[in-house]
Length: 137
Image 1 (spheres, helix red, strand yellow):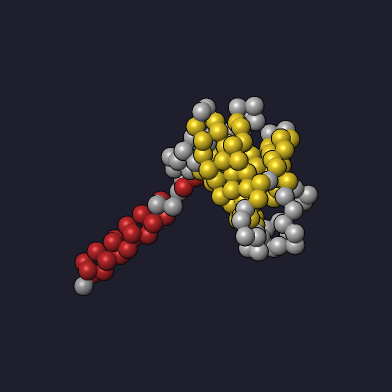
Image 2 (tube, helix red, strand yellow):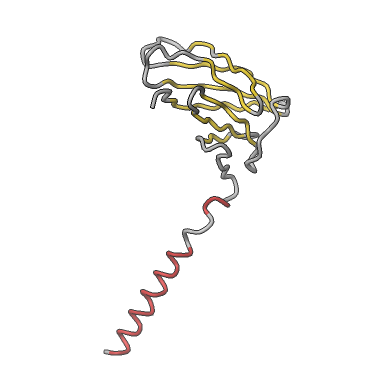
């Protein structure tokens, strides 16, 4: 009886210890990109893009896959479109460079949410990104 209790408690201790160590280092996984500015990150094949909502603007930060900000001189905007649920089709959006980010210039006309579609080119490779944006808090 005591031997069975020791075996069961040993197995349970091993399982608990394994579970504790299994949850470490999720931000160090190859291919995971961390948000530099506290926003939402979408990863592409050559770069990643972080969307950050600030008090007065929606900003896009191009990132490398090792979570470093890329210079806007090295990244070009191929297209940027936005669409609300009430719109029949997406309309072109202006992205204005400002420091290390692009500022999204789009008036959702009272909509509580819009979809932002952006295509960026970096080192002759184009990546497409999609974000659901809620401009109002």
